[in-house]
Length: 403
Image (cartoon, rainbow, N blue to C red):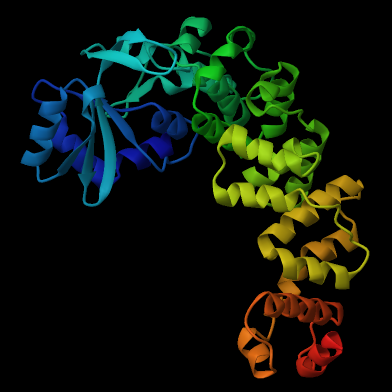
C-alpha cells in the first residue's frame, strides 16, 4: 500500500506539478480516486488534484513554470495542466451553493474538510499531500480497509445532489466492496430511484457498463433487479442466473470481463431486446450491433463445420460471444471439451474471403443490377455449403444456377 503511494509521489510529471503549484501561501494535494487506488496498492492511471489556489492563480503559476494550462472547466474551478504531454486536472477547493440532482452551482473556498464533505463516497473523499500524508476527514481509510462503500454524511442528501450517484453506488460496490451493501445507502437509493428518470441515457449507459465490467457485477445486478432499479433504467427483466453463469465461466477460463457480452447475458431474451437496450441506454452503433448479433438463435456445438459457418458470418469477436452464451445456455460444464474446442476455433482456423466479386460475374455475362447481387449471394451460399473450397468452379456453378 505505502509502496504505491511512494511510487505515485515519485512520478516525475507530478513532481514538476507540485513544484509549480505548491507553496507561497497555496497548497495542492492529490484527491479522490487516485488516493483510494494507491491505498489499495494500485498505482492509478489518472491523477486529479485539489488546491487552495483560485483558477487564475493555477494558470499563472503553471505558465510561469513552463507548463501548459488548459481551462477545461474553469467555471467550476478546474484547469487541466499538461506536464510534458501528461494531463492533470487541478480543481480549486469548492462548496456546493445549489444543486438540482444533475448539476451544481459551486463557490470556491480554502477548507479541505468542507471540500471532502461535498464528495460522494467516503473512499473518494481522501487527500494526499506531497509529503505522503493522507488527510481523511470522513472515515475513508477505515472504509477502504473494510472494503465498504458509504456515502459521505446523509445518503439521501448526497443522492439528491446528483441522482447518478445511485448507479455509482452500485458500480463502486461491484468494484471495491466485500460483503453486503451499506443499509443506509441502499435504502436511500431505493427511496430516491425516481430521480434516475431525470438523467441522460448516456450517463446511465456509462455507469451500467462500468458496473458490468467490475468483479462483483453479478452481485450488483442481483440487487439492482431486486430493488426494481434494473427495470427502471432498461425497461426489461434481468436474467440474473445467466449473468452469474457467464461470470463463473469467465473466471474458470481466465478471461477479462466484456461489458457488452455481460449486458447481452443479463438483458437479452429475444432479438427485440437488443433494440430496446440500444434505445434506453443510447448504446453506440458498435455496441448495439454486437448486441443484435449476440441475440441470434442458440449456438450449435455439435460439429465444427457449422461452427466454421458461424465464424465466417459473424467474425471472430461476435462468434466468441455467441459461443460463450451458447455454452452457459446449454448448462454444459466449464470443462466440456466440445465447447472448449468451439471457443478456440478462431485460433486454428481463419475464415477465408469469398473469392469472387462483381467483376468476375461481368466477365461471365451478368449485367450489373439486382440480378448480379442475388447471383453473388447464391454462389456464396453454395461455396459455404461446400466447406469453403479453394478450387470451386464458380463459372460452372453459375451456369447451374441460371439453368
